[in-house]
Length: 380
Image (cartoon, helix red, strand yellow):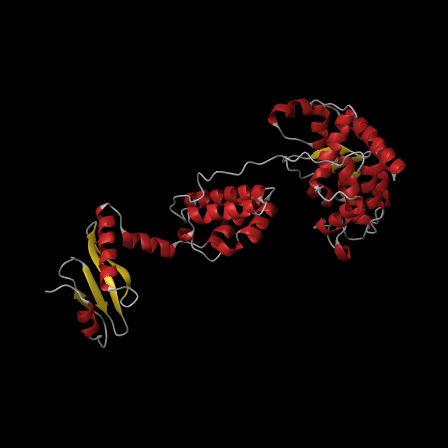
C-alpha cells in the first residue's frame, strides 16, 4: 500500500456516518481519519499496553509532510517514555488560573494579614491570566511579566508577583490540581533598595500646615495619629472607640501584623485630637468612611492632596511610621524602646521589648510629640 499523499487524501470521500481511516504504509500508526465533516491527521501507538490515538491536526491546516514530521516527533517522545495523549488529556483537565486564585484566597490567604495585598496583585498585575489553564502558563510568561514590571519601575511589585505565583503553583501541586513543575521557580529577583525616607525637620512645618487645612476631620485625625504614634495605616484606619481608654491615654490594637495585640500609650496631643473627632451613632470606628458608614478605607487620594500642598511628593504613607522612629532616634530614645513603640517582631529583639514597661514608652512618645508639634507650630 503506497504512503499517504495529497492526491490520495483529496480523492478520499467523507463517510456519510461514523469514521474511516487512510493509513500510511511508510510510517506505522500515521493515518488520516475521515468523518462526515473533516479529514484529520492522527497517530496511533500502543503505550503501556493501551492503544493511544493522538490528534495531530486537520488536513489543510497541516500538509502531509508537516503531519508526518510531527508524527515522527511524537513517536520519538513515546520512545523516550512520554505519553502525549495522556499529557494532552491532563492539560485539558487543568484548572484555570482564576480557579486556582479562588482556591488560594479561600484556603490559604484567609489566614494571612496581607490578603488585601494579594487581591491587589491579582487585580492589577495578573488579571489577564485568569482565563488561562495552569498548564499553559510558562516560565517564559512569568519572566516576561517580571521584566516588564521592572522596566516600568515596579521592581518590588515584580518580585512580589513572582513570589505569589510561585506560592500558587506550589499549593496547586500540594492540593493535587496541577502536577507541576513550578514555572515560577528559580527566577532571579530584582535587587531591592530599602526606603529610608522620612519627614525631615524642614518639611514637618509644611506637613503640619497641610494637615491643619484638611477639612475632613476623620482624614485629618487619621494622619495625625499615624504621624505621632507610628502605627500602621491599617491599624489606624480600623481604630474603634472600644479599643481606646482616653482617660488612661491607652490604645489597645487588637489585630496587628505581628499577630499579637499591642497596647500603645497615647501622647497628650493625640488624645486631644481624638476628643475632637465626631462620634457617629451606630458606627464603632473612630475614623468614619464616606456617608458615615464603616471606616475610612482608601486614603491615597487625600494623602496625595496633603503631600502636594506640603511639597513632599515622594513621601509615602508608610514613611510616616518611619518618620516617628527617626525623630525618636534624634530625641535620644533607645532602639529597643523604638522597637517596643512600633511593635516590631524580630525574634532577636522581641525578648528585650517584652521586658520594657509602658511608662518609658509613654514618656518617649510624650517627649517626641511635644518636640515635633512645638517645632511645627513655630515654623508654620
